[in-house]
Length: 366
Image 1 (cartoon, rainbow, N blue to C red):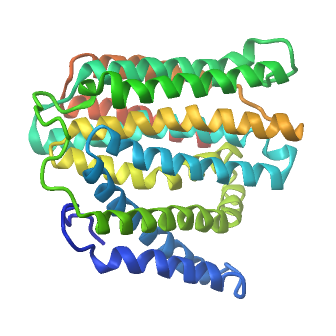
Image 2: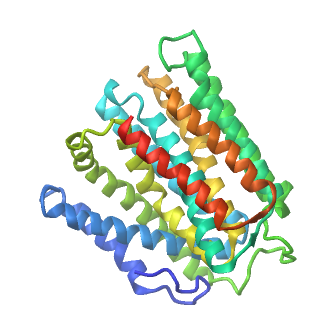
């Protein structure tokens, strides 16, 4: 499947409509036929089709509303669904999944800041040489990401109110509220107060449109099918999760690997859209998508999970380990160097991808 069709087209490609419908058909059949053995292949294929359809419909909506608001569409929509998946798995599994939110959020940060950003810089730099983006906006996004990451994922290890990597009820409430407020302020700055910081360098188009936007009918259709695709992605991912957990157990990988798989599945639509934008020499859109999705992952996941587990009285582990803390610090430091100049080459992409490879390797072997 390809997402190369122009988002301003007056007609949506048929496959972007059929893929989500096929996914929902397979979900319905899964209630009759267990998703085991050969049936897993159909579930995986439906998941892939839904991901590509979600990317295309998100691009249509983003083109309609303009930048930088358009890049928030997919980031926020996917993160809301990610939160629903995390909470449902944690509530159904009990205390043994107390660290799933932490593992998934940390994996999302590493996948975005090193995997997606690195691939965007490598692909874009390989095709276009040097690429430009707004360093002012990117540095502000990184500052918010650093604050949210440290307060939510590192600080719980250094507090004594609760044993282990946990927060007390009041601390958890503070972490949730502060994360939500900080993310809300960032969205206000990105879309209203300093919107020009997140537009392509030299852009004079106040609407953010590079071509005539799609019609209202096409946009409404894309909204409906984007939601259908995203929900299908999460339900299919949840359907595949037992097979993933069995595979993780069979290869002897740590339990945190499940969080990596969940984050990778959920972030796949955003990752594909970001790489596609970098390849089209729209690195600003790539940075908006990547950093925005990382911020949404923490800024929306932590408050929601905190509220749910304060209400239910369940256990939630947030503090990451020593190896993860070092990787997070190195990632934030390297990202600050990458985003400081507003110009990138394949070298920065290679550095970020090397950090991502180290994260994957150490997560499986440590």
